[in-house]
Image (cartoon, rainbow, N blue to C red; front, side):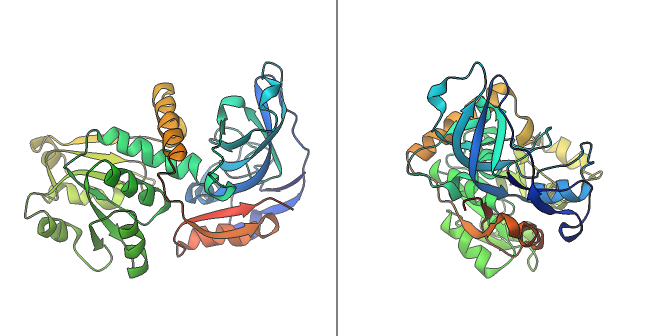
Length: 327
């Protein structure tokens, strides 16, 4: 099969290769999926540059979509021909979705409603599931004011949609006018240009000095300083799924303690079985109801994966980057 891979960490231009690799055979309990699309996420870039390579080669990307064409022992043959989307394709395993075929445990290949196309399906495993779990951990949000950092990002755009559907007032941080328009299209009532405006001051203005009830955060290193400013109400909640600084992040302990702030962190790759099942059921319902907007920023062929990774790394595109694996 055709695949992309790398064998050591480095820049896309230095380490990514495209060529022939062995087509996998599904083991017991597995399905093999003939992939049509593969999603490129910021975490794929981070893995290539920084996550230790412990296998001979890594086929990158965790997300994708395609059709089951073979099954291993213990899997019903009725699944052959089923359109599916993939989660955790390259989590704690070397062979991800940047290739023509992937074999993986059958529960990681989820049935795809007919109205969801292959491009959108390549956005579900990381962006959509992260958004669903983040809003789930935020609890009942109807009538609350929620700050979404990075509201125009792939995850943030889904979060804003979900919060709006549940009756929250959404404030989003963005980096440009184009990203502001994208955030508003998902339901953000207010936007804050974090590069040129004081986020804390704008929150105080929007909430008439009360602060927000919840912060759903993509970058704890940038958000932690907000927690001592009154931007978040007493007894408020922070739900966080990432940080641009991978090292230690200081927190204003006294402000957190005296305001009874709740901090919730999660890694979408490592959800509990109960949370995973809940999120998958929720996402399936949303897809069946056609209740989510999916934004595809750019598509590349597998031979152009280098440009796809660089596009994600540069961060200028609005929406998801997808690899088209069809011939």
